[in-house]
Length: 628
Image (cartoon, rainbow, N blue to C red):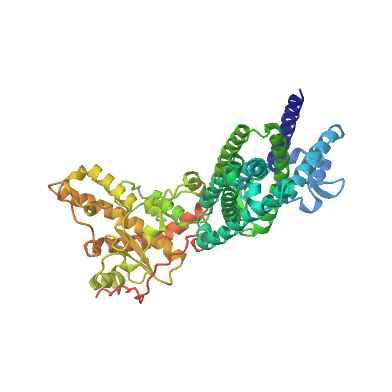
């Protein structure tokens, strides 16, 4: 009977907590919907008033005085709107002859009969404004609200898991006394509760020692990888944290191994917390708004109808986003800890119950974290997003199957179908590594990575890529050993070509032609040069694949495939690639800006450390001789 009452209290408390969480998640965005409803009401009420009103020539003199001011009887009155920049609220203003002021249209039309409803709406708006002001930052992108909802649920579950893990640690310490470890550690002089306290204190301190050391090593090794790839590493950190929680629960299952399990658990948690704190600012930067607000006029006319108004450029509010995020976490963590305490009492000390609850909660947390990371939309390019954009867009002058017809406009357009940041966010990998060709180490390298003679280098620097801060080298990678994944890719290529492995054909003959070329950057190349070189690489890869297919069709025997490419074999294609890249690049920058991408100079392309230095030759200018 007593256990039933406890269960009923736990269920009631959990339902109350989840209800509060739902209010917090919806309340943060409720103000926007209320504002949109008020704007919609004001807009249609104004349109309705203007539609029913008779022509100005048929109005009486007193009615005309109530609509227009004496100083503007011969001109049309300008429309005036009240704009709240903080909440993106826009409402029309109308001149009130009784007060001599411009007032909100709803205030003029509100009668004494619906005063209570107006005040009720004002109270709801005030509540939404207060909640928005205290817990939601200003000037954020729309993706922030989806991220916030999933984050609230994830932090609530994480707090429950933390309580279960701490409970398991304490029960594991209790299990040390039962296993007889107290007498072995503390000696015969210390007995009973004093021995348990000494062992508990010693083990609790020792488990944090290894965690701090691992945190230091993790920071030194992985720090440079977090900024350009924050989403992937933040999601991977959730799995490391889940492993730490699982090791904490294991201390209750095997108390005799408390110290090693607790030390490993704390090490995993330290690595995860460091990754979370290191990627926090990189994730928050994606929510910074650009100062653009979409507004519509009340009567559906005017120059601003359906257009965007740019106020002040990028909004620098990273401090506000961080502070409000910590406030949200504090509230949700308190609710989650309270819920976790009630849940631990309901679960009891049964090993099966504790382990089952941990598994369920951990799966739920990983699920929420996945959607939390997927909701983040980056408008800055890293190398993976840049490769995806360049791979999916279409070139007008390309000879591949992705050719589109040139537009019939005066202004030439060489690029089309450029994905938006939202399109890239939907297909961006969160846990698995990028595609092989989308990795920075595959696309960039040093000149000594493949065979390159002086004549080929002279052709690249002085002819094919003259004046550029990059050049493309063609050839097999002789510097790095090919691992198992590379051999699997070659084996698949042989299977597609119809060659069996038993025939003893060298795998080097079946290298992917797209893997046989890479970029060498100049030491002074910036992000703009990296984007241009990546564009040239994508163009060259398409041409190289077409050339490889043509050469294989010319072979009479499948057992005699063409040899791997070299730079000297692709001189004409390299020249064409450089010309096309220089021609398409300005159009690409324009299309990226139209689609919402930030300038390439602000991109997170990572550090390309393998570079080279050479004297950049000036581009020869074509001399035009006048006709005689």
